[in-house]
Length: 303
Ligand SMILES: *Cc1c(COP(=O)(O)O)cnc(C)c1O
Image 1 (cartoon, helix red, strand yellow):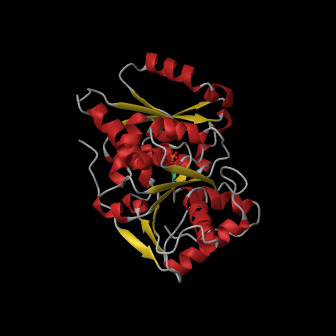
Image 2: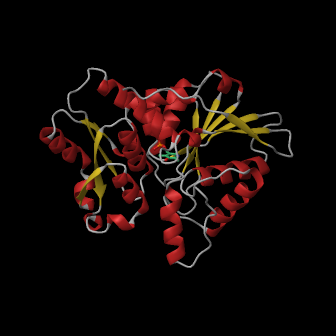
Image 3: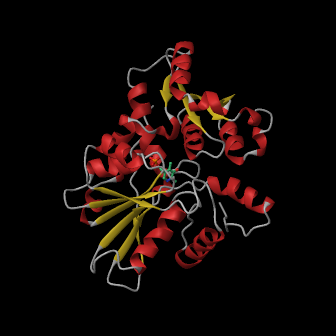
């Protein structure tokens, strides 16, 4: 069985300006599969399954709240593939059921191996050891980013996306923005909203895309995974106003920054902007649990 292509709607976010803003709803692909993770896994898994391996087995890496772990587990279930998740943090071994992302991944059939932060950091040697142990397995890196993932992102672009002046996406490992850059039209400017405070990202993106049509904009708002009250307020107001759920780690930070840029007249009059809603909504469960413990306002979320 192959992972299928899916067509995704584009909707307009009405603005009181001479600028048009649209969202491509990759979040609608599946509640537990971040849209971009689907396309990043698309070629990786399909080309692995092409020669019809006898016992398909997928291994990948992630932290406790990882959208990539959630996505790989859900895809594994959908396509009946065995999946092993290498999870950062030994301490989670006996309490992963308390973590909504890991609990859900486990319910979707993912097996886990918990490793120390130090072993996790040393992913190259970990990968070599795992490939020796499971020679037939497909090992996908953290966040799912590799050359095949970048190729898969081309399916987020199509004839409808060609008419936009700006293509916007949130940036974690850089694979998604690299794919958009690689397959964008000559006249399109790609904006990546960095939710990670990492200065090496730009070079990594250019290495993957082989193009220089992309600009990275800081949007981490205190650091990766950090959630400010303002971020929560923005997400809740956005939902009330436009009926669309954003997540606090990626798409909420991107949209908040896009609105700021619009307010500051960053985009010339008449611009047409397309932002990719990459999903990440499964992360809200874990985010709200942390916020509740801190007695902070919660993200309004009805899955
Ligand atoms: C992983 C993820 C991203 C970032 O993708 P990268 O390819 O790692 O840069 C953006 N949005 C969501 C919702 C994600 O889960």
